Structures are given as structure tokens and as C-alpha cells.
Image 1 (spheres, one colour):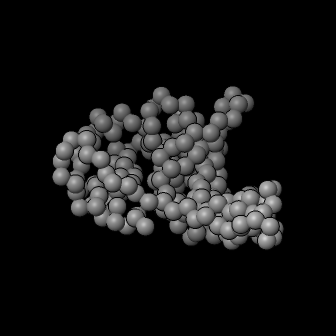
Image 2 (tube, rainbow, N blue to C red):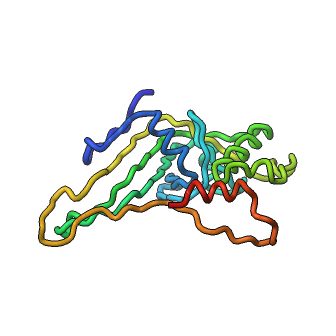
Image 3 (cartoon, rainbow, N blue to C red):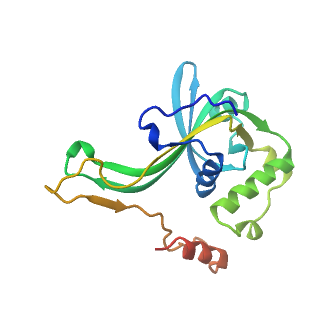
Length: 207
């Protein structure tokens, strides 16, 4: 990979480790996609799934974003984990602890129905592991009605902040308020018994 991207501000917080990038991507499923269309900038939140080389997105074939990605226009994809609020006595030194990844690449369409199905299997397994064995699989017509695109991970940068306030004093309370992602109690919409895989997901993501 020929690196074009380099973090300048707080460069000591930067990482360019591919394994760490994949770890961040694998922990999440929501990204923000940035692109330019007719000289105007746009950012759109999207569900995603990934493997080691591509980020996969899906949507309506008529979607502007899907058409732009499928056509090979360069895009940026951002994923952020906020891990805590950092309070400093000094107003201007309050902050947050986080880890973020920004990916740069060009996209293309996924046209093969078998590959599309693989992407949807990966996505459902990312959202709720085990659900793929308890769902109706799409027909060929279903798959053809949805556009799937993939963005090649051509370059990326990771940035991470950890620890307490960088400027500290004893004038006021200072510290870190952790932010932890947890899952709440499921709400049934059809009165079916709660599957074990859902209970397992809640158990793994409860403090």
C-alpha cells in the first residue's frame, strides 16, 4: 500500500496498522460515507460490513450514493468509537476519548447474486450473530432488486485518544466518564419467543 494519508494534528495519536483497522471495522456496523457530487460535499450514514480488503454497502439501485460508489468515484468512510468524556478544570481542555478510522478508496458494483448473498450473510451475522440460521433467505429477484457495492481499502488512518485531561489542576473535579455500548431489553413485535441468539447477544453486551 502506498500511503497518501497522514495525520498531522496530534500525530502521536495516529496509527497505520491494518490489523487494528480491521479490528475497529469488525466491532462496528455503522459508518459515515463522504463524497463529492457536482462540486458539493455530502456525508451519509450507512450500515456496512467488511472483510480484510473491502467495505460493503447496500441500497436502492437508484440511490445517488450507490451510483457514485459503483461508478468508481473516490469516497471516504469514517467509523468512530467514543469511549469516554474527559472533564478538565479548564473549559477549553474538555475532550473525549475515542478511536476512529478513516478509509479512502474507490468502489465498484457487486453483481453476482451469490456474492450479494454472502455480503448480506456477513451483515446479518455482524448485527446479530446466529440470526442467519433463523431468517428467510432472499430470492434471486430480491437480490436483483438491491444494489451492493464494495469499496477497496486503498488507504486509511486511525486516530486514538486515551487518558485524562492534558491540562490539569485541583480547582474543580476532573476525570473520565466512561461511555460503554450496552444492549437493552428486546421488544417483540410479533409475540414470538425470544431466540437464544438474541439472549446471547444481550448477555455479551450488558455491563
